[in-house]
Length: 452
Image (cartoon, rainbow, N blue to C red; front, side, top):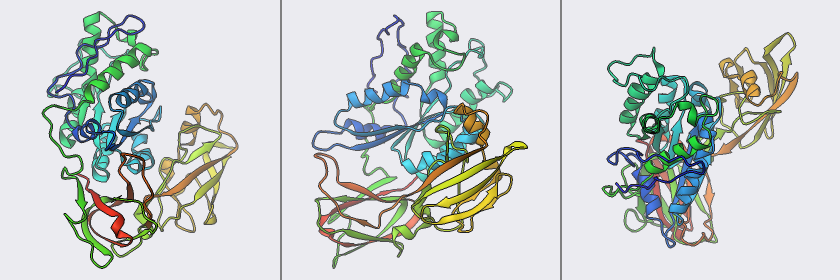
């Protein structure tokens, strides 16, 4: 693989890692993304969606360095990069917030690190595979101050859950990486070698025993940048690679009598226009408007006021079809018990929609909001936002957002950027039928995404 040079000195004189990983491993598992980046030109700028997700380590500034580096190395790519990490949220909580944060984003690449229960960790990776076509770059744990990193057991046959760091980094995560075909940054071993070669203790790169100091952010960024490379031995068509397929008008299908009927197998479908149009295209999926598919809606985080980015209800669901609207929950703390709450609910379109308590399963009269008692997380969420004590009353707000379009009228696109729109994502992965009517002469292709 092409090796990214990292032998540079930092502002404090520290040398960045010379050992950035096995060249045979760098870039593996993420070559669709790297090919999209590397083959972007001024005439053909690929749109690439990258999500950083995890907890407080991922919140730290190293990710901004990585994002800036990608933009500098691939100036002709149309990069959409977001960080939705939640400090303090281990895998047990993040497995719930991934429903609002991760899968609806539909990343091409997920850069992921989190602490917590191993089964919750794997659930996030498995569901990412089931619901998206994202490639996944997993970062193993860096060395924190409590770790006896010079003597920890690294043989996967010998480690047990009694030594959690060894279990996760040398047994469980390697198995997850193999099972789901992920790329990875061998952060823990590289970190240990970096410390040993320089005669450093782990605290030299930490500000509080766990979190990174500025020097440490540079090291973590350097390791991530080295993994984000296009391999010389990789040959992949990113638009036709098995789990992503592009079907061209006149080549893969024809349009007859002003109507397109196309059977496809997947969970997401994009339309690509060859030109702008003065008339819209109208879609049906499986004989219904996309807006009539209940799975093509999702909730955003239920955020408190006052508060921060941490949701006070970790997971919301519904029993009846949703509307695109805003929801407000008015919450009152029980004066006798800090972790018990009463609330009323109102939707901007639904209107008043019932009242309930946090210790009882709630199904709103419309059926559009369902909350299980175990999904309440008020004290923890407000504590992370330093709102203490819990207020006697406050609100939480969220939205229902669509994952579909019923009609599309392609307008002129930016020079070099594909004139494309996602018609639907979040469909049950399987066989479907698309029907399009309207100005189909503007249609150039259809792209199907089928989770692996």
